[in-house]
Length: 144
Image (cartoon, rainbow, N blue to C red; front, side, top):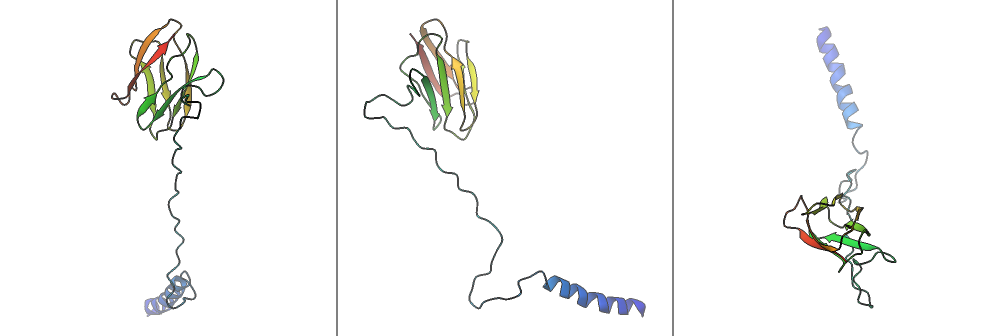
C-alpha cells in the first residue's frame, strides 16, 4: 500500500516538473521557437587582382618584398628574386601546404590561411619546388 501512495504522488510531480520545462504559451500559427544557432558562415578569401600598373600582387607585398601565393591548390611566384631574399609565402587555401625545394635548400610549411617566410638560395639559378602534401602542386623559384 505504501508503494502505491508513493507512486501516486511521484507520477503527478514528475509530469508537472516535465511540463514546466516547455514553453508556457504558444501562438496559433507561429512556428515553434528553437535555441539552435545556424552554422557560422566563413567569408570567402578575396582573390588578388592585377593593379593598373600591371605588376602582379604576388610579386611584391611591399617595397622589394617577394611573395609566393598559394590559392586553389596552385602556386603564384614572382618572375625572380634576388639571392638571399626573404620570400613571404601566403596560403589562401583551407589546407596546409609546403614549399619544398626538389634540390634541397628550403622546406617551409604554411598553415591554412597563414603566412610563412623562406630565405632564397644565395646562388642564382632555378629552384623547382613542390608541395609535399599535394604532389601535383609544383613551381619554380628563379634566383637572379
